Image 1: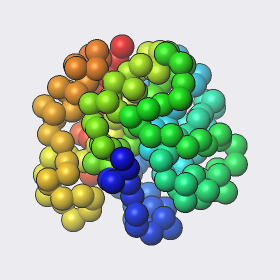
Image 2: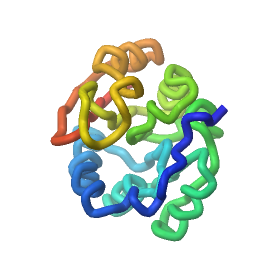
Image 3: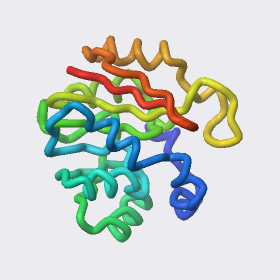
Image 4: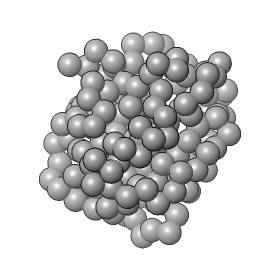
Length: 180
């Protein structure tokens, strides 16, 4: 397990260029739109960029990641958020534990994409938001062989018992807003 885990330079995850194309403030706003959310689970939190943004929006946030180095960095950079060691495929929380489950650029790093989506759906009370790479060649991000098409993401959601509310193309990424 964990053969797809990020092994690069953690510091580059917070480079100004990367932060700009992540559009974290916009992604958080769109993820929360039309909802009354108080708690968020950030799956695959990495260095805590989205956990930090959700926290600044006033939500109770827990971030999980399978990489201990990522968690150490996230804890230092975002001390107001609780970070825990967990894989996307096996979340250590009860059913419907969080109002929103957020997965940011996660699927290319999971060992079992469907199980990761099922776990997100299981612990989400209302919504799952998945930020993903578009299915096209880009100078940034993983190769096309590691990206999911819109159909693949929506099929995963359907198989996990979720309904697609919105598919929102952003400047460099795509946000899938999924409902229970």
